[in-house]
Length: 260
Image (cartoon, rainbow, N blue to C red; front, side, top):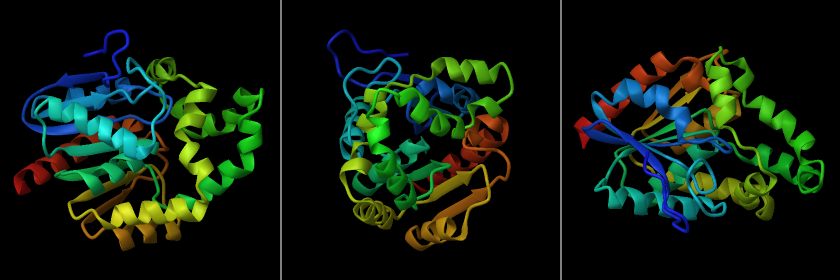
């Protein structure tokens, strides 16, 4: 683990292995430790860099927009000598790596359980905004937190994952600021625009069967899409079925590396 010193806003990260690079970004309120089960299985073949987002884990600093976070990731991996990785994001971070891939060179993108049909969620957040900003934030956020599905994981993985989760009102609202400040239509348009700029392989793995509109938006926007739906595995699909996920990811990174 490389953690920044006091006052340093450089992203913390964990690095293992050598070979073609994969850069891993965790979901909101977690840390790079959620990727350890995966990178342990990949580090004999690939160089794996798992990042702590700003304000998460060992990374310092306030929440960032997706554009700003993409810029921070670029700065870090450039310092590490990585120029064209496969970028992997879970949940909210899948949108971040999609935005990253629209702006900076990548060999491939992996989206773990994040629809690109973002307008419905943005509308829900706007309806909840007053309550989310209030003094009863923990209770208001709890249904969203439970929908992540950590409690569905087997022990001891469940407890280990919960122990890495930090739910803070300022952090959550900071990362949701774009969804709260922009209109849902505008946010959807920006997401569609970013996806439309990606011309490298894009693997999307979902732990459920998608609704038709979610599936259609993915297939319409991404010309080199590999879409997989793993029913009943939940939002934490990469942990619920970590061996299968690691094998699928290894095949995808190898394919992207060969094409590069």
